Image 1 (cartoon, rainbow, N blue to C red):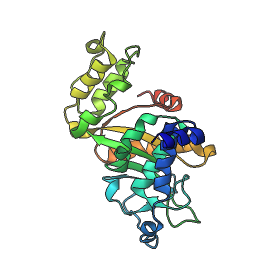
Image 2: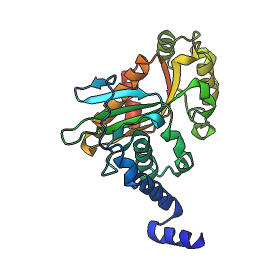
Image 3: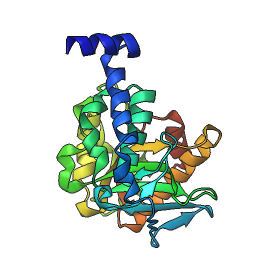
Length: 260
C-alpha cells in the first residue's frame, strides 16, 4: 500500500486524483464482452418528451434496471445508462470541481430515479446524454443533501420575499405562509418549516447532482434546456415543489430573473 501511495503521488499528484482517474478507468474499460452483448440492440423509449425539436427528456424510475446504452463525451464507446451517469458525475463534479467527498458516495448516482436529457445525432445509433439529475422522494428525506449540515451556513441571509411565499402557497398544497413566521429564524429552521408546511409530501422531491455535458460553446443553452426539461418532467409527474442545491451563479440569476 505504501508503494501504491508513492506511485499515485508521483504520477497524479495525490491519492484523491488517482482514485478519481481509477474510478473513471473502471467504467470506461469494462470487459468488452459485457458491452458486446448489447451493442446490437437499440432500445428507445417511446414515452420520452421532445424539447426544442431534437432533445429528448424523461424521468427514469430506476436507472440501475434500464438496459439502454448512451454516449458520453468521456468515453469512446456507449455505456449502460447507470454507468454513463456515474462517469459524467465523476468527470464533472469530482475531476473538474474537485468534490472528492463524492468518491465515497458514487453508488447514489448508479441507481434510483433520475432525470435525463439526451439527443440523437446522425452518426450514432445511441443517444448522447446532455444532462442528468438525481431525484429523491420524501420517503427518504433523511438522505437528502438539502437538509444535510454540510450545506448549511449561519451567515446565509434567507430571501423572504412576501410575493414569493404567497405564490409558493398558491402553487402547492401548503398551509398558508407569512413572512412574520420566519423572522429571526435560521435557514435550517426556515427550510424545515417550509417542508413541514407541505400537506401532500408525495408532491415534493429533491433534485440534486444536475450535470451538463456536451459542446462547451453550448453550455449555457444546454443548462437552460436542462432546467426547463427538469421543471416540466417533475411537474408532469405530479411534483409541485422541488428542493435543490444550486452551485452555479448563472442558475441562481436565472431563477431570480423569473421572479414569480
